[in-house]
Image (cartoon, rainbow, N blue to C red; front, side, top):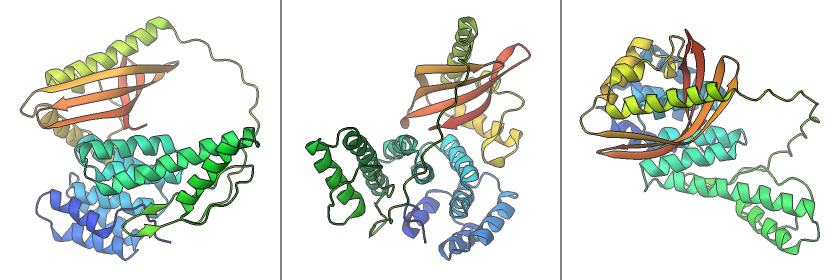
Length: 329
């Protein structure tokens, strides 16, 4: 069954029209995607990306093909690379939300769709998909309330209404138990997915020893490094900015380190002021590795965006450096 969350053909064309004049290769890959020949589309995209690794259209279509082939982790990496390199484009955020929703990661899907709308406030697909995500989250909440209190008439009524909204059918009295995991999506015509089977209950948690508290000095050092990284970005000091990335940094999109660095230098050094501010920094320290999450506010003369970002950091040669950078993670 064709995934109704993926962008319609018209939206794919719209993305391609944003870039340089289309060449035959992206058109051929797009035609294969439309025909459902995803393996062939992926092979052709990879072959052409070897010659022109910066092509955003080919990278986007590769992500679509990977999603349809069920290779979600690889597709996430492709779309996250696009959001990092082209934060002004809404389509990669939308397609990240597609994958997160498929994995029942609705909070991540919501954050990605909110970013899509920030970059393009009139992007109807993202607005509708965000509404569906909110409906799904509401269904889970009302279902839990009714499960805990079967006599709660208000929760019962609200659950029946939201399930009707999700399924597009006639409201039915809810039974105690988990809500259906379907998400109704209209793209472009109304489409409702059949409810999936109830999720298998997770195994009972086993007793694990408590984690040792993180050393406050290390946490403070990590937070200072992250703020210094954002400060170098704001100062447009590309050399200092790139020095925060570890030699083992995982370059998004499968590009070479040198290609990625050249792209980042150009974007960091672009004309006009840049302001990068961080808030709600959280550090999870595990020995010589740390995961740092925060809200990032980016503001330049022609673009503003706020996103949840995660940095996976590693201590090498006595200092903390970025090994992986994720948007919406």
